[in-house]
Image (cartoon, rainbow over all chains, first blue to last red; front, side, top):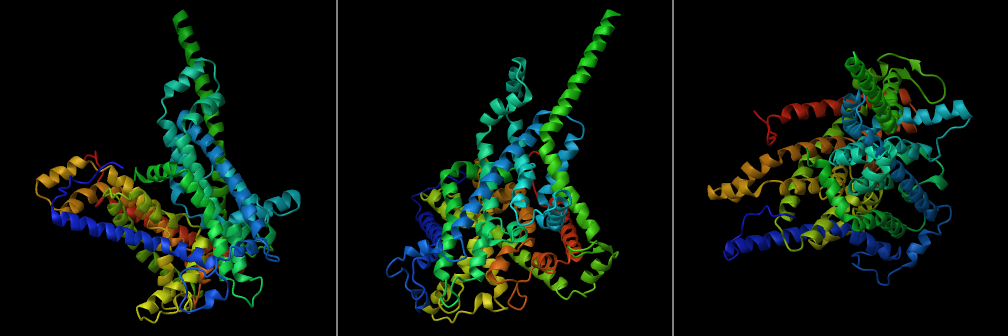
Amino acid sequence: MSAVTVPVRSAAPPRRTGRAFLYAAVVFGATVFMLPFLFALSSSLKTPQELEIFPPSLLPAIPQWQNYVTLFQLPNLPYGVWFENSVIITVLTTLGTTISASASAYGFARFRWPGRDACFAILLGTLILPEQVVLIPKFLMFHLIPTALFGHTLIDTWWPLILPSWFGGGAFSVFLLRQFFLQIPRDLDEAARIDGAGTSHIFWQILLPLSKPALATVAIFAFLGNWNNFIDPLIFITSTSRFPLSVGLRWLQQNPADPSIPQTHLLMAGSVLMVLPPVVIFFAMQRYFIQGVAMSGIKG
Amino acid sequence: MVQTAVAQQKRVAGSRARRQEAVAGLLWASPWILGFVLFTLGPVIASLYLSFTQYTISGVPKWIGLANYVRAISGADALFWPSLWRTFHYALIMVPVGISLSLLIALALNQQLRLTPVLRTCYFLPSLTPVVAAALIWTWLYEPEFGPINWLLWLVHVQGPKWLADPSTALNALMVIGLWGSVGGGTMIIFLAGLQSVPPELHEAAQIDGAGAWTRFRHVTLPMLSPTVLFNLIIGIVGALQVFAVSIIATNGGPDYATWFFIVHLYQNGFQDFDMGYASALAWIFLVIVLALTMINLRLSNRWVYYEGESK
């Protein structure tokens, strides 16, 4: 956080009230932003009856921690399985994105080949391509091609969610890593080459170890994007046992375990648990995170 | 003679090395190239073809020329224009309000308050919230009888509306969810980084010339920040036009189509009614709109975006 502020004559009283006002406004805003989480957390610990009292209490009379246990024991609503599915899908897509994007970025950053610059221009163009445009053909592709080749569809499997991430992992990831590789001096590659190192040795042993911040950024974005992804599983997955959390929670919202009892407490518990992994990742990797987001936009 | 032979040998060796380099480069870049062809270019072309056909997933696509586009534009599909205007309406408010609030938060956090790291985290966390979780949480906050928002209003003696259940408030209610989940996120962080790259000398020079805080913001900070604004503007517009999940979960397009956005319409046609030809036409109309808006933005940008180091 470097200073952009002008030197402040702190003795001047108007300045000080201005600053106090600013402080109050910023703290008030931050509180407003946090309130939905606090309400969700508090509601997730109440009984269904408590949620239908007006005026509501800020805190549960007795925190109902067992709501979080109930969530994992609902008949035909396997929250635990959905959570596990989300973890598996997210880990596989994050790996795919990080590995294939860094390989592709290496190809763009360190080799001359005919059509490279045109390809890179196309890559930049796809940054603004809305994903919804390719949704229908992608759906047909995962249905028709495997049906023709192997006699069964890949709809309602995790293939359509995972496979694309192993092919470049998206323009943004390739772009970010390429920019990062370009900043690493070529002399390092040359020295290794003279010592007889091949291109893959240079990639794994020299470039990747030096690119940890960029790799972390790409991995974080991939993790968040896939953990939060809703439209793809909504379209591709039809069996509740294969749902990731995002569509699972929606399923829970629309198909209550016991329609006679309101289930807000369970929906809130389910939402709170779904928010946790991104928040944990954020706190664990905050530095890379902020750097990465800033990196993505600083060149305008 | 000997010299030319050596030169030739060198040239041969050089061109061989170059070929080797090209092959290696293509191999390394091949994941993205293959992915682009398989999952972007191919599908984009396929959806263009499908948009001229009548196609439900069973059977073969039947060529019907421009009929799908006519059906959309002529108003034969009564939901087409309303869903498009509604999406524009949403973006037209979300983007300017979102960018202004993000900039405001970034400016405040850039004043080096003692609590800045904590405050920044408070503003940032909502943007990490999966949209499904955010929509579910807000559905409860908006609950008309027992929800916290109407309770807060009750405390100040205001009878709260039915929010998501009322066609006149549902769209605005979704905008609030969207703003909560975005203004403190990437856009704000990018602004913060942009603010920190404004050279302090410029501010000092302006201050010596007697410029007040507003003048310095208007004539120093804002021009220096304009490339960042452009970036956030383009990303913001493309993102806002794609609004989908929050509507599916919080209102399911309702009440009375009040939150029936363009992508909701596309999803309904393509994946609920399996009218894939028509949905492909919708997808292409959407693509053209997004591209056109981005082009217009870039074209207009040289009137207001200032690039340092650019000769004019």
